[in-house]
Image 1 (cartoon, rainbow, N blue to C red):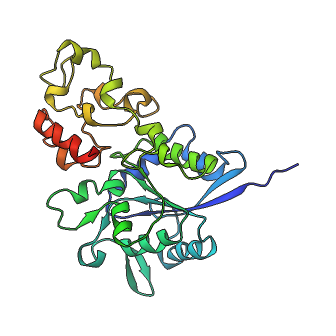
Image 2: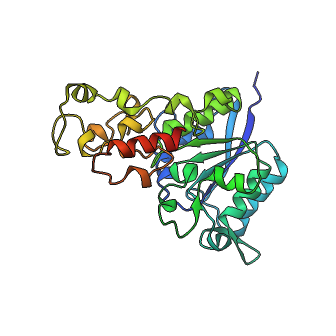
Image 3: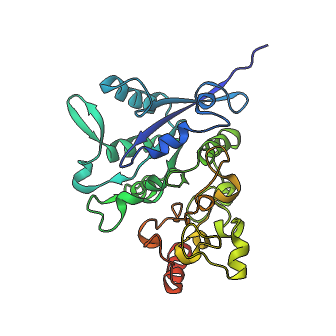
Length: 295
């Protein structure tokens, strides 16, 4: 006897970004992106991704009409996955998502339009979550994160942030799977920055394989040296993510394992408050960072 599969509609829209978050998703291993798009990764439920301009074949006005059709037909029941920050300068003129009736549609307008009738919004990557690199000082494009844009427009919809530059594919697939399995996360499931605690619940510093060097006071002076990388700019002591235990590229390696300091890309004030990247963050800046992000 066949079991009916419940379709959960989703659309993926991209603003000011480098498409790195899409590339990360395409490199998912278990499940693969093929599994996500074709198979019920949660028994009895299937994510129906209807729009993703980077990877889909459809283009032009017919593709844009899919967004509007989803909003109307599945009101209150679809997910909006957002990649990239929201550009606000000159009413979003410098970041458009497509064209309808010969008129360019600003990304911020389409985001707000879709978010109003969505079940929830998932911000994919640091740019979508907090503004990221496009919002770095002096921010001439007036870029910002999705939650900030929705708040300014008075749109009260659940937002889940999945930051990272880019985020690990497991963080995104795991978040979507949790929503499909358990419904929207409760306040206890998310941290102060609306990140799932399952992936962003612990400091990188606490699980770093070089932590013993830190405790022993053995610090690297160059990236190729053994020892803790704190003196050459590692932001692990103020960054929350499970990179040291999850690893990247199907468990092959991660930033610190490759000899690079953690650059703090999952934090809300990246990149402004973690610079210079390859210099030790002094105690005053560390204290200000902690106060600014955690109150």
